[in-house]
Image (cartoon, rainbow, N blue to C red; front, side):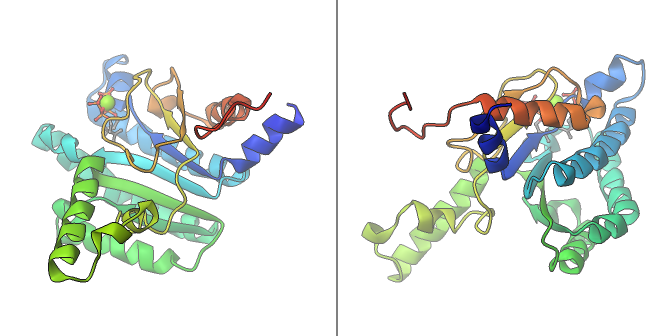
Length: 243
Ligand code: IPE
Ligand code: IPE
Ligand code: MG
């Protein structure tokens, strides 16, 4: 890797991942979809370990979208169970490894018990600094942006905000990602090449990497490969190319 690539790899400080393909992984093996989700949670563990090893400071994982509520009740129940199981079995180790857990999305829709588990996990790991792991749960970018727009409208109506003074920084501070840097790299597994309502505002200048691997098979080598691809990209942010 040349110096430029190495510099870029170091600068991928926030990686966001659309963990897709659990159902297809299971179908290909004649297994029920829940088996894919179960295997997918093992990939989450590998992914977090890889993020720490590879020096990524911020990792955001898309675990459940606001549109995923359209799935059958049984699958939603399986995913909710797996989420609670994951927290019960992994939180000690996450905490030991210096991981700060944060959740974005409408967690209340999973019910008060899950919301309480998530709040407790966030509170317990709040002081950790090695990796900020954000899990997007019942998350949808359009409703996040709409909610921010509603707050702007209310503030203008209340006379506490002058519309002229609204800028990208102030608007960004109204989103659920207020305290986070924008993602540098968005990875999607499963071969699909779309964002599916993930971080639409924040990923405005993210590099996108689509991997032909189903999420349950994702490992450290895939993570490193995506970072290497990121390192080969020239980020311009609309400025003229470097000659
Ligand atoms: C990703 O895998 C997990 C969630 C969206 C909850 P999918 O369940 O979407 O798996 P595919 O895309 O059907 O293979
Ligand atoms: C996106 O995957 C959401 C998550 C990975 C949590 P989906 O499987 O729900 O997306 P579509 O339906 O293929 O766009
Ligand atoms: Mg999918």
